[in-house]
Length: 114
Length: 114
Image 1 (spheres, each protein chain N blue to C red):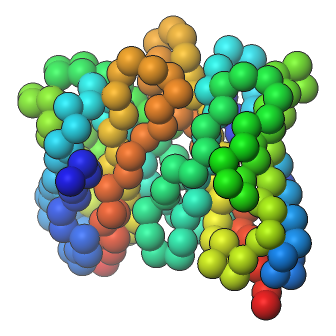
Image 2: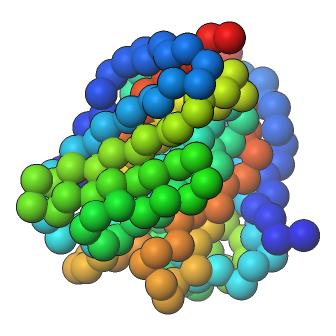
């Protein structure tokens, strides 16, 4: 069973702070990793993906990947109340009979207070 | 507009009454998938399909059926719904080539079985 684990949260940060969300995965064969944001009652929305070791930045979001440690993180700089949502980490199954599947963590609920 | 369309958005039904939740995508994606989301359990994959006439079980397939007769459609069938299938359901699709592309999700179907 391929597993993706996220820090359980909930996480609460003040407006303007850096929010740090973490994720580990069990399948060493996974090559691509995704962060989704999900507002309450809405569908998940893709905000970042990363497939190379190191950092990837997109605006206020930075994804970090360490394949040796099987660790993925998402940093949100200058957090805003509109960032308050549940963040889902996902790892792809990139080979074998499960090719094309995405495995999701249970999510971390983030609250940014003014 | 590129999208995944699910219907209905909300459904209340009685135990044992067969139902179908439809899913259609207009992006010519090869991969399609059904997830259910329950509080504290995150997104769990029910079935997925890598192409027309190619489907496979996910992590929680019991009580569900799917078919993929056309590339754009991937309906979810509950032959005899039970209360433990009360959940929020998401259909999602993804292009085959390029593991760097995550799934695009539909708006969700909230199902209640009484």
